[in-house]
Image (cartoon, rainbow, N blue to C red; front, side, top):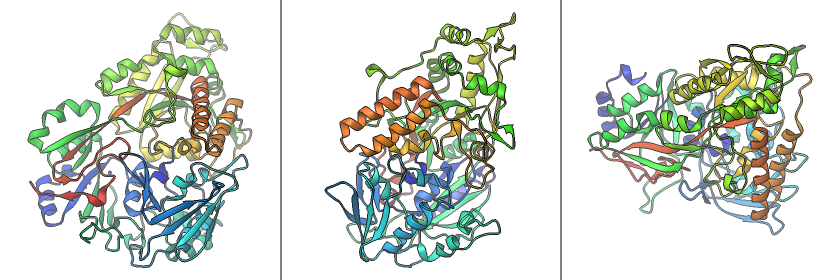
Length: 583
């Protein structure tokens, strides 16, 4: 989803005594959390992974912010905004006296530069651009400086999400202008390789509550308080209050949990398999488990529907491609997966079945009781669908296609994520019950991302999206055929070898059209009807087989004061207000 706009993580502590680390924390107020994957970049425009996004969210503020509990838009770097009567223009007014983390003044010129020279630059591939393409022609809004404090975004037609999207983060012109105009040896803007993980932290300039102090690959990212951050409390005290934010890199969720229980980590996502253990330790461990209802995230199985070729070679084996592009095959798989058992055994009851690309907590969610198609667990129905489509079974109950080929494919997910690994194992078992052989291959997250966006050489994938929030247009880059997250039939990223013969189904094109239409419609009830139609279409053709919507659960140390937990914002959405107490 719109992962990047939301901007919505440790030497692992196995080799570091947590009590020693906490002693250091007593000297410098610091908050510690973990991630199991390395950040890929510190450049928010080119970032496409959650690990980078969490760090980037601490480095940049947007013109507006989203209240983590209510979802309402609130002033941030912009102190106010005005929408024209024709709903085509929005004028944001910057707060006076804003500064970047290097002390340079933040100006309207920075905003115009970010959009005109970077996000809307066809030579700079970014999924952020996808959500700004307005109408059937995909036209970008114009961004214009009105004066030293005001900037105008003007759309060619009314565009409902423009206020939220244009209120996002922007970049410093003084630090990056030359990287856009200077080309590398291949003719690409140097910006594409700017602010990577090998950059000097002092060169990475932001507007958010923190800035990068150091990054040690495979160990940790240390962020320090931005001394030029604009927020102050009612008494005039500089925010944020917490001086350092440490993101430690660990080998697995098991290591992360171990370090949290040892007191070396302050915030831990509670997985279903760890819930009962952590719950018993709440009082002794001096922490609290927060629950915010269904999380704003998705878990899904998807097949590679791409029928394109590179240099005459299909990116997907043509035999497998015929299976994956058969609607009955996808529906059969959807019926063959035992979601109730998945919820009970893997999620320990801490989840609900997921049926839609739009989150349950969104006002645009269209529920099954109103007509959203669902795929209840029914192996008999799955076999019936397969036989109708020309598949058959041999004497050993193995599924064969009409030409006698054994139905067998590889399923990948990111290694180290125990929940997804367990889900993939169950999917392998469930599909074996209808004669399909699945070869499960957990792989490194960055390798998985490369397969999705660059090489395109995968059969099936177990993945999840998060960060789109309650605005459904945040998912347009998933459902638009040319979207950068259209994973089930991905177009090549700029700079990658082109595809020959790529095809888009009628339903695929129609889904993209509905998302465009939803953005064009300002009447909220009519928007709901459009997105209801889109949800029905997605479930009818099942390019993504939705699985489980987990509950939003986090264990948070009682050292952290001021937590206002919700599924939308999590535990740290109001990081500037949080304080630490040693107890």
